[in-house]
Image 1: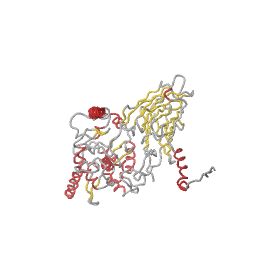
Image 2: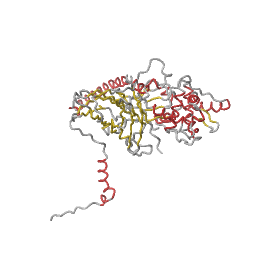
Image 3: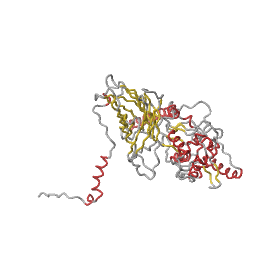
Image 4: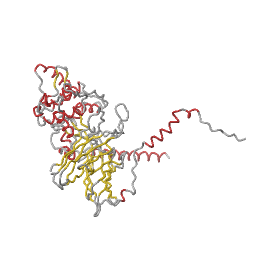
Length: 148
Length: 277
Length: 109
């Protein structure tokens, strides 16, 4: 005779803590650091016209200076720039929208890097095209624990 | 079987020996420090201020007021000094900031009223209680702004820690205590200040290069804090660095150490608020 | 309650009609990424400047969305084309707590 086992929820799982586990799991997934999605892989884009000045060896991961000089291809002008740090928990560092119609744009800023990586600068032009360039850096760590 | 295993262990030992030799040579090469970070001048290092331990890139940021983060606090300090119409301000009692040229050089001093050593930030807090906007906390933005302004005003002058005759004995006791703290081992690392800042100047710990620890650049904008901070905060960070119990802000040992450090730095000019890693 | 956010706006280069100046803006905002913990082990909530807008004579010339990778103090240098009549450059910031700030400088020819 086949014993049909009734599927019962064991007493341990019935506790409120366990039920809220599902809610915690969903919440954590939603709270995950942002994902940046591009139409094409960045290294497939042309890097012409984008000059980056970024230290090869950064003094500190807390403030790494970036200078970018972007020149639009002939006939086009710049619409926006994006700075991406792939190894950071939130990779999109800056999204700068330009209202005038410049053919050249010089941007300077300072970034916080979580780890040694390449910074990517993506330039968007008025015809919908994109260009991207990158520059690598190694960040150096301080030695002492600072709890001040 | 037995012969095979003996050969195996002998060859493993030999390989381990080779790895150690190779490893040790790598470590000693790494201790040279990165050329981009460590650009120290040749010659005695114990009279160098923290300025000499900055990379060229950080010096460039510091020299340009429009990129130097310290400018934000300096400008705030200038505005606070003059104050707002209808409210008591520093300028009302002390006059023009140029009249305070010597002020930052005299601290820490023994306060007869409070019966303890006080530094410039303590004095700013005490002064602010006489205004309509008393400030709270040594690391308060306004306190640091005024400290930055006063240190900038004294830039180029040497520390002039000269006690008044009637407080000389007490002052001497505090200085002795500071010297004792400087040479006493503390923390899990069981190190005294002197071990690093006298005996190992110029050596690298990861990317940090050990400086003599002269207090000429305070208050500092430390990039690892991403904020301005006082000497009180930096000394507390030192305690944390050797994994010792961190004293509370304003503790007497921090003032005693400050007094000792400034006496040790006699003859070195104040640099004004500086940028540090 | 919270201390004021110190800001600074300056430019490099002589101010002449048609000149392309480099405007340098910085703000001493704590830029808490939300990843740090305080002494008691509690996570410090995220509070960064998320939007910066630059206006030239009340016309929007630049709008930037900032992420947690921007350092503190925030530092941004961008070009400003000086119009023939001069004018005022205004930079506005907004943070996650809803705070706002404004800095203005006059372009004096």
